[in-house]
Image 1: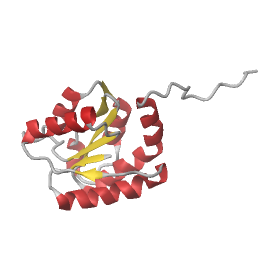
Image 2: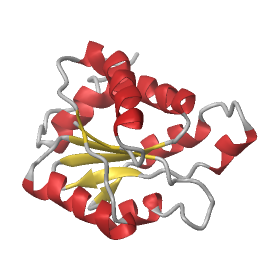
Image 3: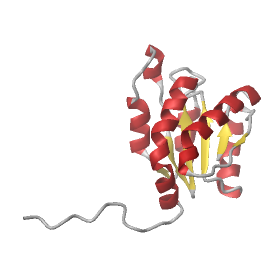
Image 4: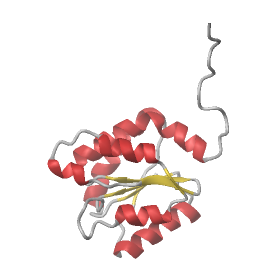
Length: 160
């Protein structure tokens, strides 16, 4: 898993801890945190590199996903995705807002190649909540993205 925090080591360390706490029940998870410079171009290069050449299974960016003029991450992410994951996006939006600003979150989630890309909120409490609700579906989602074609649903029993 690749974490792309805008704030360097300080943000990266709490984010790595949050990921480990939320996703450790899903199995062993190796995380790498990389601070990205260069704004839009730098983030686009990082996503392309780590998804297309380094083949990371998950890339999480944090921050720059609100309503401000400089909050470009969701738009940039969507432009790089092959497919969106609207269920994950909607669930991120529907999380209970603890502060009014939480309602302005516009994070994107989707797939590029065989990589899941998720924009996380900047506030640590909100990010932890998003990571917790993604935990139960993470392994299944990664299997499907990697090509698992087995049936997802349980077979229906005979009626009547």
